[in-house]
Image 1 (tube, rainbow, N blue to C red):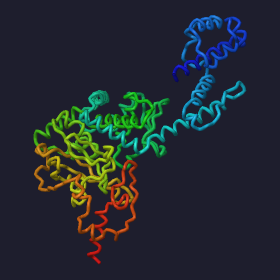
Image 2 (image 1 turned 135 degrees about the vertical axis):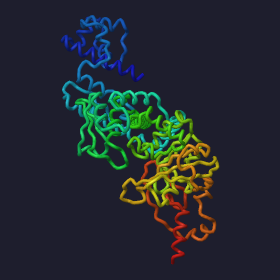
Image 3 (image 1 turned 30 degrees about the vertical axis):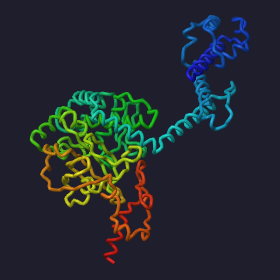
Image 4 (image 1 turned 90 degrees about the vertical axis):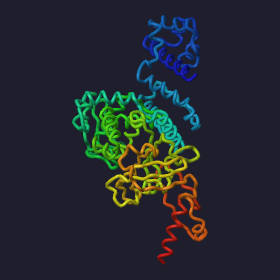
Length: 486
């Protein structure tokens, strides 16, 4: 119905436009059609649908083809603004404001029309942004994770596209160079420019009119290299992305451009060959994969999840965990019991303290991967974990760990399988690590009053406890240790 009304409005504007070009009044055109001027006015204002015979008669009277009259385009720029304003004022968003509708008049300037239409556009934009609540974000993240799990985190169409573009750049082997990335941009009609004044909310800006991709002059904190950012900007064009209509679509586009960049930096053929050789020799290691292609540890770990199931015949999991134990990113198709909230979301949930993703923070030597076997209710898993620091001024909050793990039977292919580090996790049973021992809880319950630190992650829930946002067990353990010191 909305589309039909929209078509009627455009048609009415076109009739009025061509009538004005012929210098005819409503009554004069009505006389030629044996139609009252008032009835013709209803048609021009989009309030009445004319029959095909009437439209043919109108076209004939205006000396134009029927196809020209029925075109879906506004006859001129002013008409386009008037049509857009009329549509905006009929929207539920505007109706909810309780404001009167403004009908454009001949005396209204084009600038006034543009200002009113611009206000409506901004109103719609802000309403769209407001829809992306934390609840929607968590739901969209969960749906996206399940979608990729069903595909084994593998996207063959993007793999093929990246392989083609990398070969076209002249790349043969080793890490993709900045020069080769520049060539890839040039082949798409873009040049890469490095500037110091990018908007703070952007990682790159693409100038479609002048064929330029603006990037920061150096890598930004968090491991996002210039090559990756440039490739992601190109991916938007190669994958035909339009402005996302929802938060879920925004997340999907982000996933696709990240996937494309990873495929270029670690091409499928070279990566699979490298990993298959390492598997055959039983020395698979994310740190070797990372060094071979000159990427970050996290990028190599994520890329490994793309290829492991499809090309190495193994199931696995990936975790990025904050220094406080909160899960930032996670993927699994090996049935590792990831912590979830009631909606199925994992972001912001706290992983078991016995998992290597957290025990690695206590490891003395952080220059190499930390290996550990963990017995869980779902079976035994082997994990390789690398810790890092996001250069956060708050210290521990800037720490993170990157873990890649597999079921026990798959550990035989990895370097570090001989580790003697072993732990037992009973999570989600709260007695494993989330609930203080009864003696400790009895001693300090009612005697502790911690001040909770607000969790910065927008997707993070508050952990359950006596005080929202506070881990009771950690508080009690802290007090107990200081009590002994006293």
